[in-house]
Length: 119
Image 1 (tube, rainbow, N blue to C red):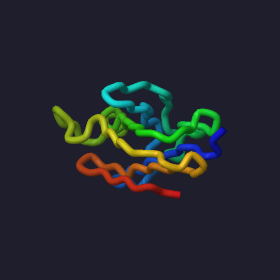
Image 2: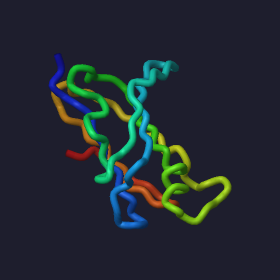
Image 3: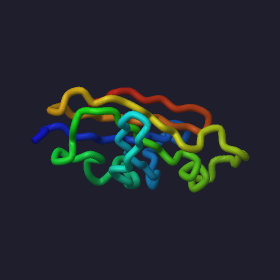
Image 4: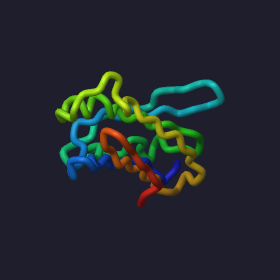
């Protein structure tokens, strides 16, 4: 069994606050196949209540997190656009170490985003 796990943290850099209530979906990618593994939303701290991919389901491979940024921005009252510059924000990444903690944060504003492998 693997010891690693996957987490995220979303910060709304335009408002200087955690991005609460932002929907996040995790997919495992194998070739052209895309399998949904988890769907959750961020809490008041901008994190999910538990690991997105817990230890018992953690495995090496290619994954994609999709952040529902447009719906979140609409809910926060960000000035509307049609279409929004950022709507669904996909981040595709690889997990090569089944014993490690992978943290994939998102820094978000209506017109920009950034990510990195955190700790």
